[in-house]
Image 1 (tube, rainbow, N blue to C red):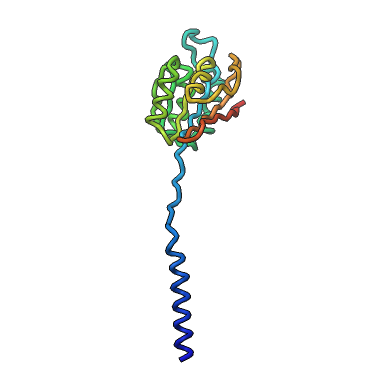
Image 2 (cartoon, one colour):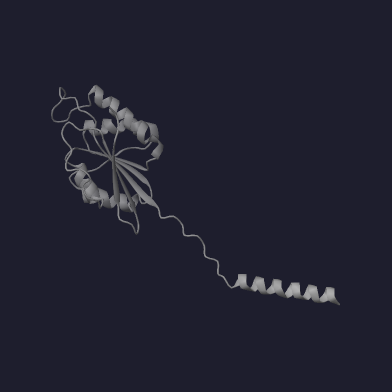
Length: 180
């Protein structure tokens, strides 16, 4: 009879322990919030001896465009945006060839339009934008962050801006440099 009482006590304590566990509800883990990443760069060095209205890249500019491709190829961009100038298209050409993504033209004088397109069509993905010394900072502002630098000098081609945007969080920008 003692063995039977022992088994009954064991059964009762196990049942009570399990009933305490069942009162806790399962809460599924919160899925990660998708982050939209936008890389922005100025076109590479231009060849001042070429057409002044629409110059091509210099030898140094071609090397910088290749370096940009190496730096960003692993980011798997979903879209590439360029203005309709030889120097911006040529800056993006090596990355486009490496990723197979066809560059899209955008109007650098309409930064809010591009920002809205990125937010709606490319949410949670990576995008690369190539612009000009006088258009990149307004584009960064249109993405919701303050200018990370006061201006971009005519001689500066090495800035790489990264804007990160996620629902429920303030956008953030980081600044780095690439190339020689």
